[in-house]
Structures are given as structure tokens and as C-alpha cells.
Length: 428
Ligand SMILES: Cc1ncc(COP(=O)(O)O)c(C=O)c1O
Image (tube, rainbow, N blue to C red; front, side, top):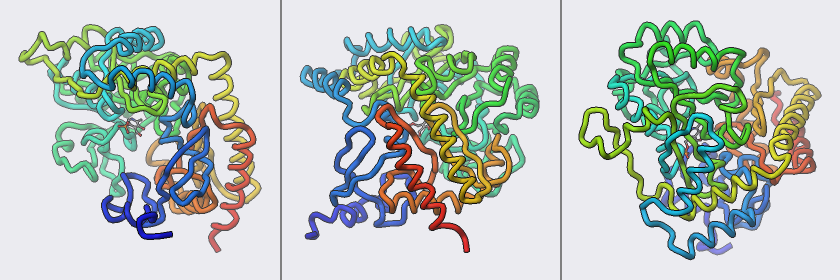
């Protein structure tokens, strides 16, 4: 290989850590990807990988899906961006409003980060209150509230937030943190701070931890009673657990919802929406009133991403898609469980729908603190070994994303690698 073909070294020269963020792969070990098809990706050195992260879940339809590519190419040929309301954007808003129980009004942005961030801004403007409550360990995007109480290991007493990694000490003042799945503690925090709280934001499926019975319903009841805006971060669950996302799957509707990832079929997109009266906060006619929330995005809702999203929704609408995603996920989690049992590991497999995550500990995982008690070094060692064996994934998160392109044979292949990785990384 000559120097100019060595993309790993070239990446190392410019990207801090050689990455574009989050993978946590040792410097120089991260493959540089060149193409993808279905559930496979290839790096610049010609190596093929079985993809078990699928762009962190964004490519739920599978890489290079022909219908999505065709729609995006057709839209691009007419102009890639106008930074204005355009035809595919209107059609997409109509489709989302049909599918998403709470989305009476919608705005488009370009990422999940912007979508959840705008939900919080909208809630603050609507209520005139300063604070946000989030759940410990939740990730809502790259802005300060999105990463509050996510990466730190020195855990403060809740509801005190941990500002590690946020670069913004202001979160200490503006964010309260509750334990996921603990309705009694959450209710108490909500009641104690109700005068200051604008919003509660929750990943309905918290990372890979499902809600216990009544948790989301309890959040809905308490926030309604206290006049606090309930925000569902459906960046992961939207279009993945059901066509109507977690709202449909768990039967609970928030006031505001954020989408990203799977909506775009791989193209960059984000959307937020909700109750008309709350969404009115972003209406420019209110400018510069005190209850106005700034919302404007140069690339949000561009025709290429919107057309790709319309095509992706058509794919999700095909008959049997969600039965298949759920059946595949169940089978996959069972396979992983069996592999862990056979290897004599003490571990749990988390997840729902087409998502799975192994946690190396001896009891069920219901919250971030349970997750932190797991042997995460072991989890990472297994993930790195899988990467070495030709499985592409995110060793930091250890979350596995299935897609419509995965077949049972692909999952059997993964499970064989998983079993081998458990053996070869077994602590001596
Ligand atoms: C639940 C959740 N919300 C928001 C985001 C942020 O989305 P994006 O990376 O598109 O900004 C992510 C990304 O992983 C996520 O998992």
C-alpha cells in the first residue's frame, strides 16, 4: 500500500483520535469505510464487514436501498436545497402527521440533535420556565443538555446533574436528572420543581432499556397535571418500534416529539413536532415576543433528504415490515442469550424491536446505575474482538442495530462470531 492509499494514517492526521467521534476505537485501528450495500460495508483496504451498527441505526432500510437512492437522485436533479418550504417537505410533513399521534405541527432540521434541542427550546419558550428534567444516562444529542449525566463516573446524588463532557457548567443550574424507570422518585422531583420545569425529555426506550409497566403512562399523567411539556426523543424509536414509533408501540402520546435517524433512510434529517399550541412558539409572527423560540435550519427539510424519507416511509409501509423487525430482534436476542449461557457468562441481553445490547451483570438492568454496575470492560473487549473478526459496530456503545437488510443467516453469522469472541476474550 502506498502512503496516499493509507486512509487510516490520513484520517489520523486530521481527525482528533482518528475518528469523527464516539467510536472509541484505539487510534489507527478504525477502518475507513468506502461503500455499503445491504447490511455489509467495505473499507478502503477492501475488507468486508457485517454491519451491526447501520450508521447508529440511521440506515434501517439497509445501505444503498434502491428506492431511497432513486428518490434522492430524482430530487437532487431538481436542486438539492432551497432553504424553503418545498414539495417533498410538505408531502413528508403530511405523512409524519398521519403516523405520529402527537404531531399536529412539524418543523424540519438536519439531525436528531437539533430536533431534541428545539423541543427543549420550544418547551422553555411556551412555559417561560428555565429547567429541563432528563433521565440519567440518556443521550439526546451533542448539545449540553443532550449529554448531561451521560459520561461521568462520579455520580452525584439525583436530581443533581453531572456536567462532565458538556463543556457547559450552566447545566448544573438548568437540568435536573431522574432515575429512569423509577416513577416515584421522578414524580417527587417533578412536584418539588414544578414551578421551574419547562419539560421532561425521555427516550421512551432508554438506550436499550425498556420502560417498566406504567412508567411512561405515569410520566404522561404527572406532566399533564403539573403543566410540564412531555418530550419523547424518538430519534431511535421512531419508525423502528412501529410505524408510529414508541407513541404507537407503548400507547402514550407526548406533547412534543423528535425524529431523526431512520426517518431519512440514511440521508441527514431531523424533525420535531407536537401540539399546535406548543409548536406555535416557533412561529416567527411572535418575534420578538418573550414566548418565541428561534427555529431555522439551512438544510432542514431539504428536498433530497425529504424525498429519501418519503421513500423510506414507503419501505416501512410494506406489508409485514414490523412483524419481521420484531421477530428478527426476538430471535437475535434469544441467540445471544444462548451464546452467553453456553459460554457460562453472567449476562443479560437488553433491547426491544430490532435492537440488542449485552450487559455483563447478574441482574436485570432497569436504569443507568444498573448499567454502570455491569462489567463494561468485558463488553468492550468482546466488541473489539468482533470488530477484529469483521463485524462493524460501535464498541463504545455496544448497542447492536438490525435493519431490514439483515437476514437470519446474517444473524447466525454474527452469533457465531459472538460466541467465538466470548471464548477468546474470556478473562484468565
Ligand atoms: C436517542 C437519541 N437522540 C438523539 C440523538 C442525536 O441524533 P444525531 O446524531 O442525528 O444528532 C441520538 C444519536 O445517537 C440518539 O440516540
